[in-house]
Length: 200
Image (cartoon, rainbow, N blue to C red):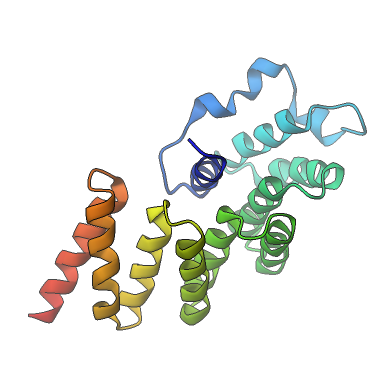
C-alpha cells in the first residue's frame, strides 16, 4: 500500500466513510495517555499522540482530540497528515468551517496535492452547497491520484447532483471497469442504476 493510499484510508476512517483499521491506531500499546499528550512540551512521541487524537475523535471526544492535535501540529507544523486530521476534527466536532479550511490549506501547503486535504476540501464545499468548487477539488484529486477511485466517485456524485449525469456516466463506467470488486465500484453501479431510472 502506498503512502497516498494509507493517508486516504486514515482520513476516511476519521470521516467515518470507510472501514476502521484499528491495527494502525493502537495507541494503548505505547503507554501514552491523553493528558500526557496535552501536556507535551518537548519529549513526547508525536506520532503516538497523533494516533491518540484520532482514536479520541472516533467516539466524538473532539475537545481532547483537538487539544492534542493542536499540540502535535505546533511541534510539527509541516505535517500534512496532522493538519488534515485536525481540519476534519474542527469541521465535524466544532462545526468550525473557518479553521477547517485554514488547516486543509495548511496541509496542502505542506504537501501539495495531499489527497486527504483535497478530499476534505471537496467534501466540505459539497456539504455547503458550493458544488462548482467541490467539483474542482474532486477533479484535481482524481487527476493527481488516478489510482484512487474515491475521488472519481465524489466527482460523479457532484456531477449528478448538479444535473450533469451524462458527464458522470463515463466516470462511473471507468470506476466499475477499473476497480470491479471495490466498494467504489458498487457505489458507481448504484449511481448508474439511479441515473438510468431517472432518464426513463
